[in-house]
Length: 481
Ligand SMILES: Nc1nc2c(ncn2[C@@H]2O[C@H](COP(=O)(O)OP(=O)(O)OP(=O)(O)O)[C@@H](O)[C@H]2O)c(=O)[nH]1
Ligand SMILES: [Mg+2]
Image (cartoon, rainbow, N blue to C red; front, side, top):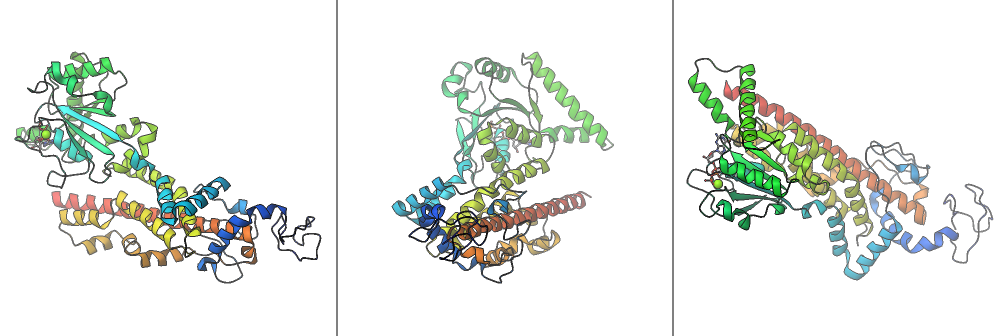
């Protein structure tokens, strides 16, 4: 029998709780009042509690980043760096229903869905402009591709776009970039343009030019602004690097930083004047080199896409953009950190309901999440291989230079499980034997442990990315010498 108030196990003959002094209402089934209702669910969690997770000495010690002390109430198991999501009674009932009706695999699928909603967003970006202005190259850059990558849009003077073509992101296919022929091509005359193209279907429209915008561009922009004032229309001036190359050829002395800034300013003013003269009052202009998205205003363009996309699609937008800049990286880290709460909750639930009553399914969930971190922050093996190849370096040398640990941890389930185990600082105590409180405590400790592992790997990936960026900058500088 257990005290309803503090959960302490009672002697059958006692009328008062030996822990807190509350009067014990004796029940025929041996549970005090509050406990009986929960006994079925407690049984499920007790099975999980029996798993080998928290075996060990009697003396409890804290988890990483935790102020917890065994003996405190469960309410104090909170955390200052992630929101510990409670598992409500309604959720537990729902989990049990799915488990009974459809089985464990379905339950895992449902948990996964709750954390993958962003993948169901749909983000459509339309790119239009005259032939040869750099539409296809921009489409590739927005998807993090080069022209010779699989699935890249064909580029070059002989590959003129004649049809509306959709280019989904190679991995996050909810991002679709649409190649639209410019106005004035035989199939896309002004008269026919809006019969073929419905701008309501797109989240953004990027109007591209590699010099000044032409009459047809202005007509298109004005018509869109008139029909749909809320449209997110951006003017993209490509091939800025060509302007600099031309200037370089014309001069004897190289341009200094001040002169370069002045030139960008002048080109911007010229484009703004060009658009205003065409009747566009407040144009949003970005000057870019699509071959090198880390230069000029490509980052600004990415950031405006993130900021102006609807709230529901923002996280999805952040995760599908290539990490060309510190701004995007920091947005990515924010989105990934936000996911720690739900991921650790799902991991804990998946372990609690697994047939073997162990943490293996949870380890899979958090390892997949940790691998997503490495990928998003550009330090997975695939990304590092590209960097190593570009700078003609050996991949293992590169890993050493950036003090890389994450790749070894994420290499296999075994290595990940070992790392995970180093976060298991919890030691078994007698409170853990209590049917409800004990199993709930362990569930929450487990949730906390998963979150601590995820946080640690995210920080690790972040710092490895920083080291990588420094190294890339160094190699780029050395190469240009
Ligand atoms: N230097 C430089 N070249 C670029 C840039 N953007 C595109 N190009 C080059 O310009 C040429 C045409 O680019 P595309 O992306 O094929 O142009 P497009 O607008 O898709 O052309 P069409 O499909 O024919 O209308 C290619 O050789 C690209 O490599 C840029 O920002 N800088
Ligand atoms: Mg093209």
